[in-house]
Image 1 (cartoon, rainbow, N blue to C red):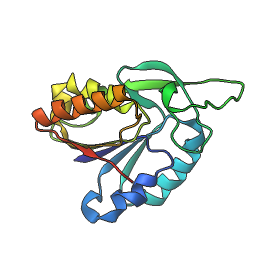
Image 2: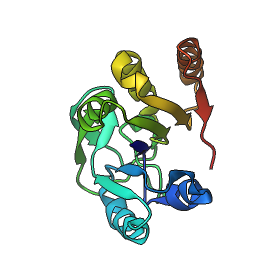
Image 3: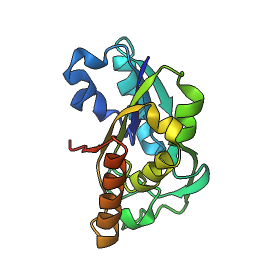
Image 4: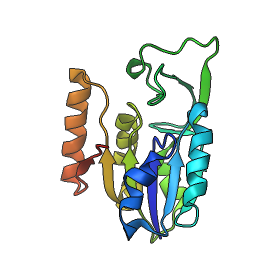
Amino acid sequence: MNHFFDVGANAGQTFADFLNQTADYNGWTVWCFEPSPRHLAGLLQTAAKHAARYDIRICPFGLAEKGGLARFYEKVDPRGDSLVGDFVVPNKESGYSVQIITARCSDIILNHIGPEDRALVKLDCEGSEYGILNDLLESPAALAKITRILVEWHGSELRNQEEAQRLMLRFAALGKPLERWVL
């Protein structure tokens, strides 16, 4: 069985922008990871439209380098909420904070996809891509199940550029080159 991990699913734009562009993904299990409460209704509506074509699993929690409870930051604009406060300035001042559950991507892969299954991972998660990729590097068994990793890099600071370069080199050395996600 094939799995598509849509990390940072937002309201489900990946269906129209990527998955539906070819019949290659028909019948795949699509895992939609989206912790933002404000995107859940749109994601559920989008999933309902595509339920006949895919086995869709809505996961209203975040993937991160470690599992637990974490503060979640909502941006002023309607997209791109994040677990990383640096990427969402200015933070929406709403009088409350949003706390979300996080899990490790490697744990989901190892515990929920079969021994012969394969996964394609798309990371558009507003800064969490660094921690998720580091988690995968620490889990050779999970990484072995992944056929492709598509990444949208976030943050323009030199620190983030150097970290992205380091990760790209490590994954390439393991025969898992990171591909750029640009949509």
